[in-house]
Amino acid sequence: MAPRLKLRDIAFFERPVQFARPFRFGAITLHATPQLFVRVEIEVEGRGTAVGASAELLVPKWFDKRPELSPAQTVDGLRRSLEIARGLYLARTGYLTAFDLHASCIGAQIATCAKKNIPPLAAAYGPAEIDKAVLDAVLRAVETNFFDGMAGNIAGIDARLSPDLKETDITTFLAGRKPLPRVAIRHTVGLDDTVEGKDGVADAHENAGARYFKLKLSGDPAADAARLARIGKDLDTLGHGYKVTLDANEQYADLAALQALIDRLDRDPGLGPIASRLLYIEQPMPRDITRQSPLGSLAARGFIIDEADDSYDAFPAARALGYHGISSKSCKGLYKSVVNATRAAKWSADGGTFFVTGEDLTCQAGLAVQQDLALGAFLGIAHAERNGHHYVDGFGDTPAAEAQAFAAAHPDLYADAGHGIRLSIHDGDLLTGSLHATGFATSVHPDWSALRPLEQPKSLQEQLA
Image (cartoon, rainbow, N blue to C red):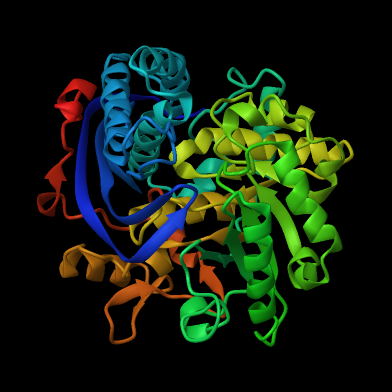
């Protein structure tokens, strides 16, 4: 029986994060963005009170890419999503399981945000962050770790939001999980990143010994093909085997443009190093075009959705269009990741190949990377994009004492090699042993006194003034 809880408080904080180098994906280049922190206090029936936490970057122009909005306006949309979710969650005053709380609010969240001109992917951000903090608090209250708690369905996840599944599908899937002891990093190569030579894709100091690489695409088939040929030539100097994934971040206008890229991958000898090692292509077209465009023969290449994953029925809809995979990102909702992993396992058992991948847009050292890493390890995702080791300098602007507390509590995940505390990558892998701590993959919480309250979102009129 999943424990039941009452929410007593939800508080939001933020901290600026400066990037160590520009990160260009899609149509935006990031140099800095705030990191969100959530602190919840709950009362667990028969267990007393507990505090839980979560964290995630507030990334502009990913959740909402509408061209008429500035980057700052899209971050404010995420802040509004958080505030709307806070009101809905705190309005539930009775005892509920963690999943009851999520399931009873998500529909109203999407509807309320739609009235405020916030699209579904951004609308889901608020509940996703609160849900992680609530789960952390529940796990602490019952004194268990994430992996054991989830195997026993401590959140009470059921099939009410996924009627294509039975409740036993979910509980059987959860009970059968054997968390991975290590997860390989997939090294991101952004559109502005160096390709050849020092600091290039094959530089071991730069790629931390990665065996998996995620290559960003621009949406121009000729330009992308030329760049991929350069990257493939350089990666072939690594001296060890490697695999790649491609991510267009919705930049390919339509199926014709996508077909032009695939034709090059199929026929251009210079693209052989990439084509022969390609695992899948991520979110090639805009989310609205995706929903109207069956892949047809292109499906043989292996495609996944990411930005188009904005509802509980997105994966079944994508499957019908020829997609075989979907990304797991804790910023889109950990319960949806569990449901989609259950689907992938069930569909694959029935014949076919379906999968969930680990993609990292918003995870920095500390809470965010640990919780997302634990989720992926629990679901059996063997390699995951981890751009936080690359684009941000360790713990960034986190106070030294806070970074040291995380490093002391999770010595298999962090190390100081003389340049500050950073993710510790072991032969291209991250270790998950210390994530078995009581709570949601963390022994420590941020220094709340060192954080500033979440900035109040501006109205569109204020931003235009």
